[in-house]
Amino acid sequence: MSRPHPRRAAADPRDSAGRRHSWLNSLTRALSAIIAGQHADHLLAADLPDHGALVDLPDWLWSCPLIDTGRKANGVGGPLLLPVQVEHNPAPLLVVPVGESVEVLWRATGLGIDRAGRTRVSCTATGRPPRRQWEDPPPDGFDPDLAGITGDPMPRRHLKAALAAAARDGKAARWQVLGDLEPMVRSAVRTAHSHLSLELSDGHVRLDDTELQTVTDRMILGQGESADSPVIRLLDRLITPGQVTNVDLLHHIRRTLRRDAGDVLRTHIADPRVGPAVRRFARDAGISDPTELLAAYRLAHPNARLGADRLVRSLATPMRMRDAMALVSGRPGHGSADICGNPIDGHGRAAS
Image (spheres, rainbow, N blue to C red):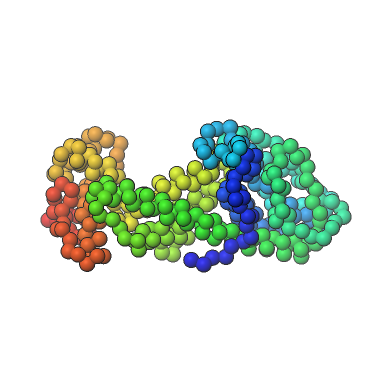
């Protein structure tokens, strides 16, 4: 897929002590562009002053983590800096009229860090040529000890042009992040597929590359005309303060993609989420009759919401997957029966 990419910071060839984690640095710059773009859209819909300052406050406090984050926090010679998202109230992107000021309350929570404070953002009475401040964020990210920031005014037409540019950059940055995450999504899908294949067929029945790419695309772009997908929902959490606090961003991304890849893959082969648990219970209990199995499962798991249809579909998944692969490869199937030997039809229902 060919997608536009905004200018991104060059990653360090090696992560060294006291510097930012290079991959997370690239990611957070793109996330900041998305955040600024969203706020720019809101500001463009509001009344703008004749002259005012456009100020974009840094969205990330870079610090050594105060919790265990594993090897990713260790660089060459010592610990790396990892990002903690900063929440600004009323907003990180502000238009301040000439001669006025806005008090911004902020809080940074994550990686064992919890800091809060306030920053006064003002606009000078005289200005210099307009500039887009989000292109050159402070080298150290958000400074919690900075009490005030003064911006230079620009006329309304320049404010509109700058905000429109920020909005465009934000939309391009969304595509950048989706593209940057695609290799991780593909890896998560293949890992989930290996686990599922092993559970269903001892690793003998596997989806082909075309099927796995379909699952990967659904993870990123969704299905049909829906603008929703697991990766888009993940991206929305990454740009929302307070959503990722107990782990670092990279771990959260990997963990979420692994979970969602398993869910989307099961949906792709019509396997209910409860499928692995039902099949494991059936094997351990040695029960072949679906009615008896359903009663036993409900007795062992009284809080589980399992009906007869989902139970039968769970038992039929291995053969459905085997028959689907036989259809793709052109080889004949092996008959239609669930893992308990019960005949099933082509839709995974018990045959009458």
